[in-house]
Length: 122
Image 1 (cartoon, one colour):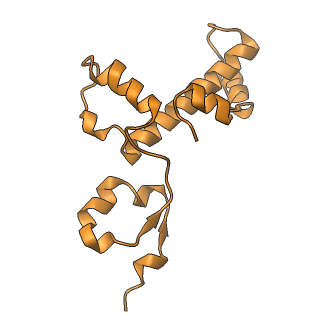
Image 2 (cartoon, one colour):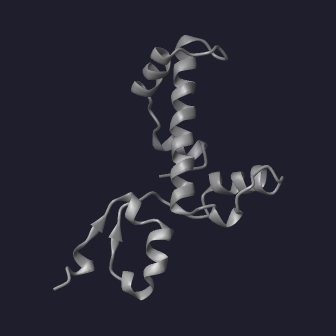
């Protein structure tokens, strides 16, 4: 007897397009946790405008807004904001030590206002 897919909740790696599109109708009813995705977010539009449309990226622009692409953007935001937080504490424009970067991560505060400023509203 098969376990009903309507009772399955997948974590992020089971909900990517590469995982669900091949299933076709067989994937109907599967639920997966993930990030907000899509081309509609301002940060994605900025990436299209400033990277893809200027020929600076070798990957297909059709991946913009996919779950994997979005996860990479989220990781980039967290990294950049952590570094920005550390530099605000230890010296803007200066190279940061591992300990200083860790401090930036531990003191990271990306609230709704900052997310909106970054073009990635919650």
